[in-house]
Image 1 (tube, rainbow over the protein chains, first blue to last red):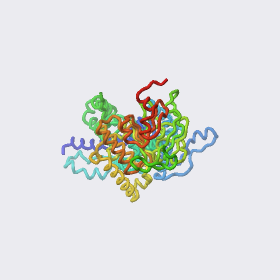
Image 2 (image 1 turned 60 degrees about the vertical axis):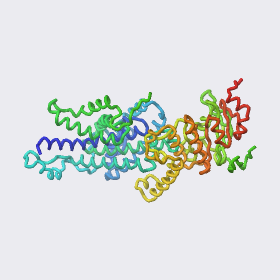
Image 3 (image 1 turned 45 degrees about the vertical axis):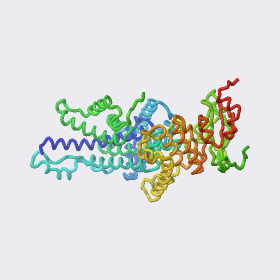
Image 4 (image 1 turned 180 degrees about the vertical axis):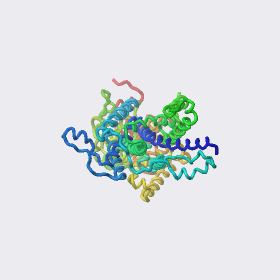
Length: 333
Length: 272
């Protein structure tokens, strides 16, 4: 195989894996948007909050330690124990469910039937509030999250793909990050589980029903409030998974909440209402931006990854505003 | 006249049972507008009960009170002899009161089959976790629910469109799918909000036949709203007539037909 083709393939593989991660974040948006028409700006901060909570529980941090110390003049910071990752993850899920309930009970229950822009504004408020609470609760320093996911390039893949170079001395096999590979598997499992949940369970059916028509959902006996708490919980769980993966990759820090912005172009491509759309959109953007950087990047001085996705999204907005799989916009006259 | 306690026998010989639902002195206001003014009536086991009246008479409001979508300012609702506390629409549905809507409220993105299946949601007992794991119990439940749904689909003659997304169906069929979904819930009381609105003569005849068959075959108690007098008189056992939020007549179709107030309301005699 010629060298450029080999590198191109490696770029595509890496792009696909990055794309899966984008899709993961976008999924959180789609879930909430479909069921309640809320564009949840706080999705990224939820991922940050989930990752911080997970880290805090794992190392036995005392929540609100600084606040407590400031008020009572104490010097507590740590419980002095460590919690195994798996138990900490379960506890974090409990926290996210509690968060979902609070959000529904105290914010969105009172905003049912409001304009989308008002709901959107509410989520912006929620995002900054949650960010503040997260800092107050766990401290704002950068945390190295390690739940035991493997890191670094996969030697096995490198060694076993070397032959593709066919004697080319500059080719050492494909370099694929193990964490990216694991993340891809996790994301795939999560997506399959979500689809199965929404297709085959009672609550899944109810969730789809609520997403489709509130009035009809009420008339067949669905408790809208419960379904919304459920949806926010699922979105919180997706945020936790995204938080774990991205947190393991680059540390738990404020910039984690910005991955939400990466999900925006994915949503414009895939459509705000489609789960397959979020996946395909994520893959297209992941591969697209890596390939673009690889091929065009050197000609324009690089750093195209920062804007490529948004330009692609703009093109889609102009020519196909409902996205690849979004509900068709049909105007009846 | 009708016997107040034990029920009665209809002209075509069906035995009508005791009171299923009783509305007592219902008053509903929207700000200064009185939509329903001090109305009382009952619905009996196994009967087809109609609420009729000219446009804006408050018929739909009354149906929405029964189904919990509106909360009346005054009055009491009794269901199976028990006073009903204030309830949300989904709780009313869980009690076994199913309904259809004047402007069709279906799940447009789902197939006909999935739509009708949502009618079974209240009958699914198995919890989230055992269902997620797809244990035998959940599977059995799913099969049972499917059987009931298939029976309803057969009954309403919509087998040929069972896999079609609802959004592609013509209006008349959508109305029928909505009826199927309500019926799948095996309701103790079925509320139909203008089931024949916007239909042509043929579709109206079909729908009338289905309503009669449902009542006959499953013994379902039905309360329906309609402003097409002809249809209502043929269908129903007893009729409540409303005008300007007030009850102006109540009785068998023949009794109502000869009621002077009713004739005035429909012929538009001025109210002064």
